[in-house]
Length: 265
Image (cartoon, rainbow, N blue to C red; front, top):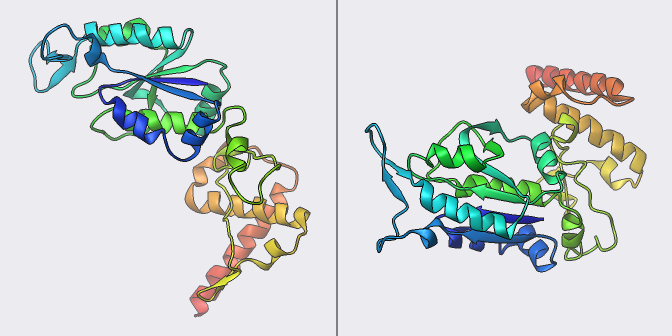
């Protein structure tokens, strides 16, 4: 999959994409990242890309000429790609949307705004998707675009499997995103590693038993517990599986007993 950023700060993007899973996947040829800088298409000696707001008001607006020229170049690099604008008016990014983007079979161009935003005529002409990562304001669209790319890229064909080759003990095993938080609208269960005991706390004994059926039930129950505790609204849209009702009732009984124990203490 190819990602093309239209950004005034290409070095910011290139630096971030050199590391961790994205960097490894890029070196494996599983994804590519390109940047197009609208300043390269400015026609004045100052390479200006913004101008004052029509109608008055504070701040500057990014000009349509330079951004449309940059977008033309981006579409040459990724023909047929979706064009996403990072904007507060966009649909809030969730795992379902991430999966849709990853499974679209199309590359992704990400339009990163600054200041008061991009001239509306640019958005009307080229944008296919409006994306928001939350109801707050950033200094620019680069960080938001990186969030989108990181979430989408890791679901690309072979990306997580390629990374597994760098992790001792994982070679040859299938790496899956199906147990991530928000898959089937549940938060992920708690994770543990060695040492088994540390600072007076131990890994749950069941996880060391080798009984994969019981471990699977424990993980499902702990996912239900985490979701109920931290994001109960997700339970309304979760995909209930056979046995979930019994696990949910067992979890609630455990929580009740724990609460009673605290009161007695």
